[in-house]
Figure 1 (cartoon, rainbow, N blue to C red):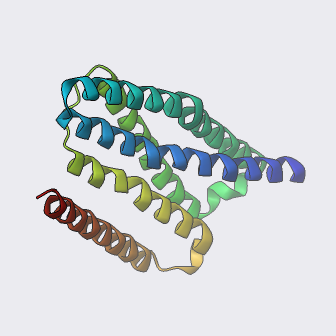
Figure 2: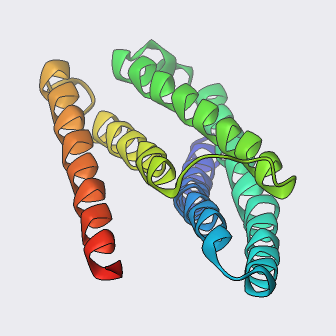
Figure 3: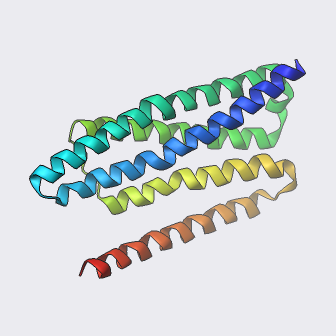
Length: 182
């Protein structure tokens, strides 16, 4: 059983990394698709079609399979080593994972709307939404690494600070782009 647990853990780490790669990149493609609306009609069509194809490949060839394998390998670890489920930190981690799955599904809903040309978010709104994956990654990793040794209040405060820093960076980038465009 030790080899099964270690194999599942290794696969879990590999596919979580792959999953997050997709979760980080797909909103960037959505941003580029939204921003392509400002191009001339013939360029807009070519760029948008290419970005939609890239999004389709990323989403269905990398992101969805990685998410499924990450979840399945996690379930195998919990099945092989049930004491994980008795640890309070694991409950917190699983709560963050549920939020991550909800985020993933929300990106899938966006994917469908983008493919159907019915998506109406701004690129700035997407940039903010894109950072949710970063915040969840930090929350999950810090929960797993520190387990019971870290004060939850301290951890929550750190996540809030990270969110504020990311928000400020997005707003600064928006100002920079406006200034550069004028």
